[in-house]
Length: 284
Ligand code: AMP
Image (cartoon, rainbow, N blue to C red):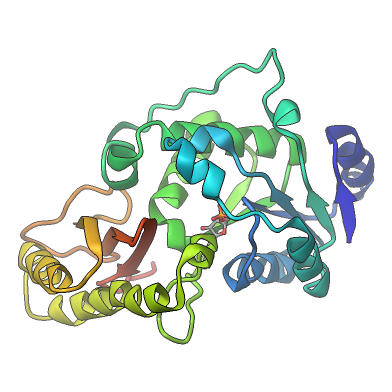
């Protein structure tokens, strides 16, 4: 694996490959890598000729300075894991390179997608995501970019950004990778104690409950039952919503194909998110 620390080094290495017509698969990350990130690398390896991962803890997508400060960082381990998984390039930019003094903020009208769930509870978060992802796309110029379904709303935002900015990148969504316990893998899990790790399992449990309740109840009733179930646990619920997979509007009376339950909760002082498709999406 080649480590790239600057835009110049990146250009020098990727341009000849691009000129040969090779497909470049890209997975942007914030490091503290785990098997969830590696599933993006594997998906990219299957579909592309060259795989590049970026590691950049993007300050503009944190609305909470403490969360940014405590975000896990383990570069050496990350590089080892990527090497073991045959990643071709890793891009490790500095904040100055991503946001130079003449940087012009990218604005995208995200409308309803932005004003719910993560957008509602983390003001400015998706503006940060749009800016870092569009900037990384411009620098890396990938053929395909890989994002985890774990960040369900982020995928919707990136797809909408891509559509509005007319970027020549195909967005690919990769299923959420879970621990054997069902807990969605997350860099933030590193901040959980043994006990908290056990407690956090209730998040995927309630999502699975929702999936079975969805067979018998409306979205509104399913949601209510999920909230009541969750309130009996020691985690603190921030939101639990059942939404349309594309518009992210709340579903109440009727189910739609791909209806998804999204949840954010605090386990101790660590904020965790997860989601699950409750009604299987019919592919056409
Ligand atoms: P992050 O480093 O948390 O910004 O995540 C980088 C990418 O990895 C995003 O596209 C995430 O959705 C994806 N990702 C994170 N956790 C998982 C997981 N458990 N399964 C699949 N993809 C994931």
